[in-house]
Length: 482
Image (cartoon, rainbow, N blue to C red; front, side, top):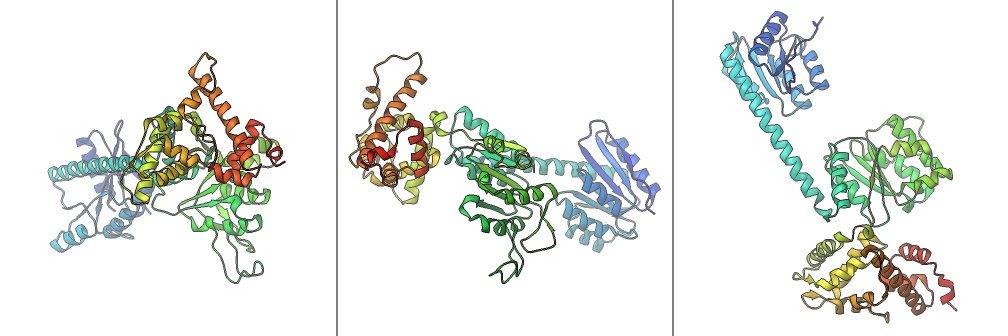
């Protein structure tokens, strides 16, 4: 029977040493000796490898000193198991039967150092001091690597405004936990990019990241896609199929546009989040999965809750860590940076020499509302890149891209739209944008005779983005078809 674990705790200790020896008097005596010399080191005395592994699984341990010859689990076995749990732990092995072969074997297996009995206190203290220094260096290196990884991973989050700075801090914080995340934002704001960043900056980075656009899969197939199915579950199921939740085991599953899933799928997903279990279609058995779910939506889920279209309990399961993405119209200060960033990317994609954007074009871009958000801006910059034959994109290129008979929009046109003096720049800008949008839509619909698909193609907007503008301006495409 193993004896109780004995701890010699230090005040405000950040470091922990575990001593393992099947002779309790030796283990406790050594722990008392070390704790007397290192006032800021917590020392835990154990009498078996099993006890030591229990401590290692429950808390952070920096060093472990273990006897090699012990019943049930030898020091070499403990060494191997401890390194599996914590690969960077400093393991020191000791034995009364010290030989060169034993020392070499222990060091090759991953031990940091080797001591022989009887213990020389001064040598013991030197080994512990060096071990603590090594732990400190490893922790600092890990911290620096995480900082660099975070900076590299967030390189695509272009922007200097308050909204972007807040988003970067939020992502860094959310990535350190394992709770469910709900990302809210309009289409084109970068919800999948944020989901990937949360995964790659977190502890699950080495595991799979899978994403699924929920409304893109028919409702009758979405259940099978998420939860899998067994052979014979339905016609055509000629073999077992692993669903996305099982395939992402240990990693992250991004459920895009979560607001569009059916009540039946909501119920099964809720059980998975509650119990960590899934039941494939056609199966009578549940299987455990360890998946972090990151959901995203452009819908007003609160309205869906009131209308009973989305389960309230599922909403609160998903909305543990909410992340909100601001639309591009609310961060115009980031548009010039984004435009330059997308221009560099487009030039690389097409193997072109570097181009630059004229300042007047940047001002014009910043004055736009971009209902398609970052995605729409990126596509527009790609078009500018394609149609720019020189090295500078000026308003002539913008007019050519907008060509198709529409009235070219310049900074002068915008400024002449209204002569009224407003109390603030923000009000003046909002009025100019409002007038421009209304005139643009009327001209667009007149030219395309109210054909929404053609209007979307000409304007470079998606049908959804164009329909949102029509709803906002109160225009009816039907009247232009006569």
